[in-house]
Image (tube, rainbow, N blue to C red; front, top):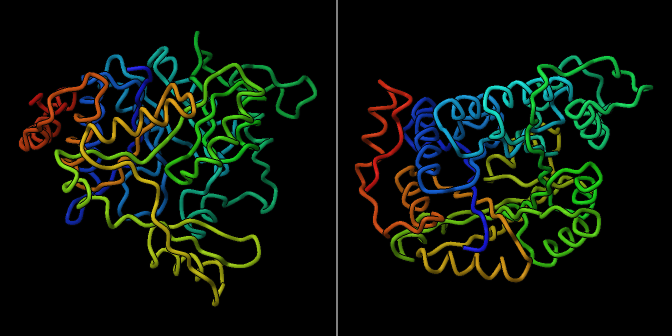
Length: 356
């Protein structure tokens, strides 16, 4: 295989399930991904989302790092707007000391939640004072100990200093984000799971490659099942709802209910909702791998980050195994993860799904 494959996990809580089980499943899936040769395993950040279990991906990453040996683990990503760059640098320096050369810091600009949680996270800070470019630049300065002497926080050293700091990634979907990543020496991850338009991917990648010698990553929604029909059953209902609040004010949400609640929290009575189908690579393993091969050839992608937005953990395990870099047999024992759940409760370090 000419490219690396990594995983983005949102810790879905299935209907009738609970957060504790969803988090145990995430740990087990990460351990299985390590066995199967995946390169990285990242956790996303979402706030006040009843169907998702991880508002603090750095905490979950720390737990998974302690229960794996080789796979890189990190965030995809930390929503930097909510946090002081100095604190983020401290957290990831600590992780990089605990798990040398295995920690990834992925950062995003989006809020990761509705307005109420965003406002609660901003408690104590003056509104309108955030500048993402400044925040990210300061974060890099703290991580690399390169803040200018005249910087207001130049004397604040982010300890403990690791021998090798976390690898840094900026998640975005625009040439501007790509240029910012290149300017700071960060890797760029194009968020194709939000915007899969090929023209947009090409523009962002071109902008990054003009300014950096590093390779950009491409995040995509990719889900495989034993048959194309089975894959369709799991992903056919996926939708993205673009909420238009006014001129230049749009936000992508997962359901009409979320959109209505966002508008209510924003104090907007009249809005427009645009329903679209996300760009999804789904089908049997041969088809999905073929689509990844096409994207690799067209855009020169050297690493994919796969997002499988399916709550059924057994289906996610199946997809994980079918798309694995080690190309396992196209079959999955349905009892595999169930057994791992029992082990995770009693022996967290032994909670990887059984190999079918």
